[in-house]
Image (cartoon, rainbow, N blue to C red; front, side, top):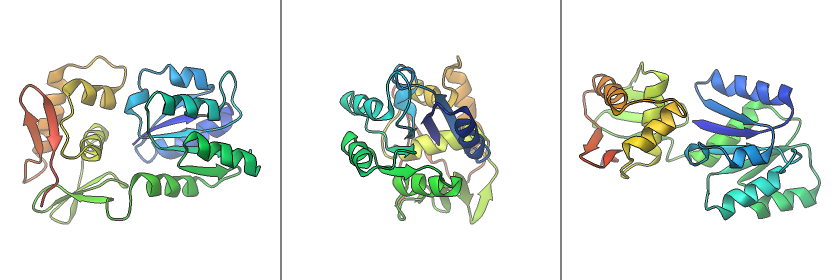
Length: 217
């Protein structure tokens, strides 16, 4: 999972980053809304966590601009602004949830999972005995958890979040490697390694278009 965090308190932002990165998620930090809006990775994020009281462009202004730009990625306000008027402003701007500080990391994680993965969508079947748990980012083959790398987890997560849809090679590379310069061969090698760990080839190569995973029925 790729998280964008808008937070100008360095202690809080680092604590959130450490918590989620130890769980194999990626966290991109911003201290002001303008820098967030100008990020080249903005379309590849899975969720936004936004403080309200941030410099240059505050969290509510930032989310309004994201929605105006057509970006519908889920967003959670994480803020000390607990007045009911701010809560209303947050939801009117397009947030999915509103959490008051101080908070528990586990609560934040639970709320994220609830937004991103409904109860019947957490574990997706992609083969005869293959499942991918989106919340835990685990590949399960014949009731056993398969040992896969972080990049392999990110690849599966991205493809399955867009299940039945073709994703171009460039979009996949941008999601997994972000700003790093990576060749198409690197992606093909990653897919080959992942395929070797399963009895069923669930990643489809659509010649000239990209890759997709189809939901198994």
